[in-house]
Length: 203
Image (cartoon, rainbow, N blue to C red):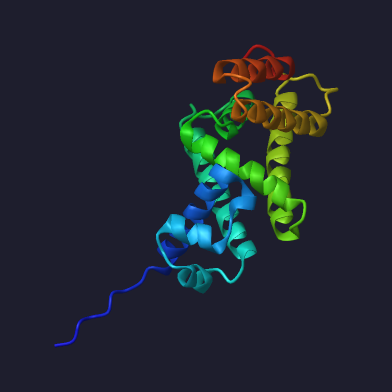
């Protein structure tokens, strides 16, 4: 009696390879990435890597999507834990805190995210993905500031779009200092809260 062929989970294989790519990138940067290095890290052959990803760019885009999906899941879980209905200030604070590299998983994703940011300067596909994410987050922050203005808790003259873009830039800058070991988590969160209090008051 013949042996039944094992069913291959192609999504699982692709995620295994993309996970290996992210570990290589986290340890050595994007310049360390090659089909051979990723295959060795994943424990598979270079032929298998090429079967699932025709080019290095294909691998990079798949891995970047994985980071974005994990980040979205973290944000949704953090938002779901808020007391409902959540105030705009709480939504903003939760989003920005969740995006900051304050634990091992987020630090690993953050290091790879930095590498992808540099990669996006020369790869239009990656740049589009990152720009879309930036627009969505900045828009969400601006919308929450406008909601607080409508409720009378934020000054009506404040430019919500500019303030939202500034908060996003602040979070990214603090994240860079966290990844570089310049700030502790306590220092970074204190700086974030100080700026949030300037916009929303001491909420």
